[in-house]
Length: 619
Image (tube, rainbow, N blue to C red; front, side, top):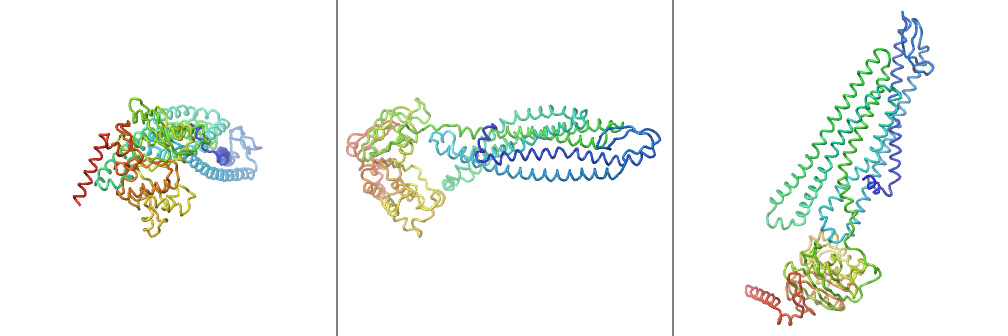
């Protein structure tokens, strides 16, 4: 897990490494402060002893500080131990100055480490989000379907934040806590080995507590993140369909559904946090018990003259540092276990290969626009028992206009999405210009195909910016020609700002029919060899539909066009019409041929003619 995290720091190695070095310097300086304090306290204690030595009536054991030695010695009555008090005062001042210098340096190193850690952490977050976004951009539709949009959003936001926190913890706290543990332990054994063994006995107890909590908290946090996915999915669905929600007055229902999602997240969080709550009281109990043990042992030694108060103070400080380090290490372990769920989810995306890869003929381009389906089977679940399309055989010549009709769920959209390889076939082959689409590079194949999807998608920005998605180098003349062919130019010019009109998020400032025509114009600007209109004129009237089809022919006569439609009037002029029924081709022919020979086509024609006649009578 740590190795995976460190991969995300590419480009930010320098602040990461310097963070580690500065943390080590900060920790080393903090560890020497207790021994300086001990020497000051011991020296001050010797001043008090000095006042009493001249009046001794018997031998007395004191701490000898002369000549820089630190040892217990026995002096006879009336012996002057300390000598010149100015020496001792200088010693106090010297250690005091050293403490101030060390404290200032430690603070400086700690502040710099914090700043560099923040820089490295922000860079890590940027890298991870960029890697995720790039990976998702390369996903096939099947990959996106597998993860779901809401889950990918959560992984790119919440999970990356968790991973960033874990990374920052690794380069700073994970270094600091073990370093403090090692440095403090060395100093404690050097100062008073007998007492050092006491608090070392608390380390296994703390480790056991944290191990038990960490092993149980990981699956709970993993379950919590799944609840987050569900909650984000509910929010996304509600925002996308907000107009439908309001149209059916379902705000109360959506609010209740969201409250249920948030309640599930709350319960999952609480379940995980219950274990985390136990950590503080248990670790505090062990820590305070150890401190009491030190006080008992140290108090006895001081009472019999085997130890001075400053030494006990230093040992108490080292005890606090060591046990706090162990607690911090255990806390880090728990936090990393918690973050592991997020890191696993991130790398599940990063390590997932797209189900659709570039073909070997990377230089192959679409030139004529011929299409051929050869015994094609297709399944969204890659299951032969659950085929969406079955045994499709169809040839489309360059420049032909082909209509596809059929009922809902008969596989019309699935069929045309195989041409630009949004999905791959389960069996058989799809050929474009006589070459299997799997042999093209995805870029060259999709550059030769324009597709207007059922769901018309526009982006935030102006009309011009959206149209330039089709061709970023298009001139104003080319833009206007495409818009005129799509019957969009007139309504665009009716806006005060014309082509500079801001569409708002998702094109909220235009109607459904206007949005469809803009999407068609955008596709035409690409000047493709193959144009696919997937029910893309459903929101325009019959007359406008006819004008759009006329404009398509005039703008690009040699373009192969596939039109999926519910209205027969949209396809009756096509060179041939394909009828899909339950994922199979039922018939292929012209309007007149199918009207004469195919019962399904006749039934659709009669029902639509009857509906049109009734509508005229009502008017």
